[in-house]
Length: 252
Length: 252
DNA sequence: GATAAATGGCCTGGACACAAGACCTTTTCT
DNA sequence: AGAAAAGGTCTTGTGTCCAGGCCATTTATC
Image (cartoon, rainbow over all chains, first blue to last red):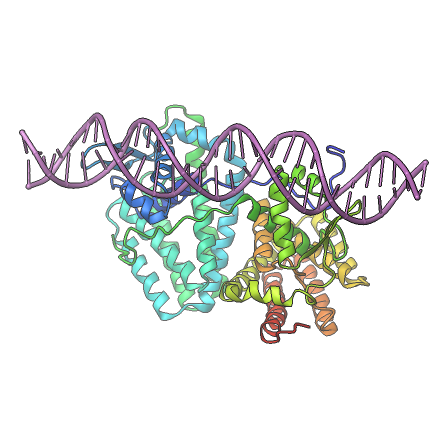
């Protein structure tokens, strides 16, 4: 009886991520979230090792992967380190294609799930938000409206959505949202409008405002449907970019 | 840099589960889901090793943990194996207490999140369900209504909720739901009414019916709020059991 | 009752990932 | 020029896991 019948329960092979993989994911998330903006430098290898409680060799492994897919550029010498690439669309298109193509179906599902989850978070936020949460959202909203550069815009966008999720008052939900963000964005900016499509930026701004107001008013239904639509938009934009990157070998 | 909240070091220590831990979690999920009912035997060590693509030593490590918390009982000899304990409330109360007490706050958050996610799934299901999905839900509903034993009831309950989630049509959501189930139930039955509280069973039956009808009618709002309330009920029941187990050293 | 079969229990050896730390090379600041 | 700060490269030790064999126990079967 080597293979034979499958007993009840679809128990499939076990997959456990390596520490290096986990570290790489975390760094990609941090970059995608805007903790480290294009042009900025990540903490040094030794510092990261201490922060993540991991050996330097593992950090190097993880950073090596980020470099391999073109997310960061590594410089040596006294001011050296891993610098976030200014634009992933440049030298990275082939790498993106190579990494993303096999994951395409999974990404579609993840985009969908992310929209559902963020909609859910907005609903819960509308029912549970405190004044502090409203303040945080308001500040992020202002920052988004007043953003001069694409980087500022991305940072503010991330902060706004994080504030919405936080307003739901469930730390596990925070973790879930971050996890989905990690898995959906493989290190490139999360809200990639504004550059390619200034009109999408204005639309996003309007939706952010509407979402804020709905949450402020405690209108869960409205907040949820706005959020869900909003993230559908995001997914559409990213899908278009990826498809372009898949079809055009030269990238932008 | 408008968020100011986080110094660029929001990166915490990395934690990666061992293979053995992952296996133990999977087995607990399978048991909690009802794939292996009380009194039944899990597949043999060699067979599990092949199924999960893992060494036998690792399987033994995982099963050893299940035994340590009293979820299974191990017998030797030709008909030996890991047998699911008949009732976790008996010899297991002290173990449950020991395992659960430190995780209490996290569990509260997980219960809450699970309610939100299942509500979200029901909403999506109402908008996306196909006739096949409706059939599956209907069959599980009948099975639940006609359940004679507690075990049957639990199996049918799991099947119903799984069918709802499946009706949302997103495999990633399936995985999320299962993951939450694992983390919320540490191996003991998920829907522990019917024994302690026959009235809760009737209420659950009614809610299942209402949820089915809402999804059938495509009424997302109604389906979502019913599901959310339903899982709040589940959480309340479990909370009561756990609190009892925490306060009464003798268990039931 | 004797035997074979199926199971859990246990042991060894090796592969691999990771941690810890020392040391080298490159670049830049003083 | 020299110190400082970073990445690049080694070595060594350790813990986890895999592969496989053998033993001990119980039970089905003859």
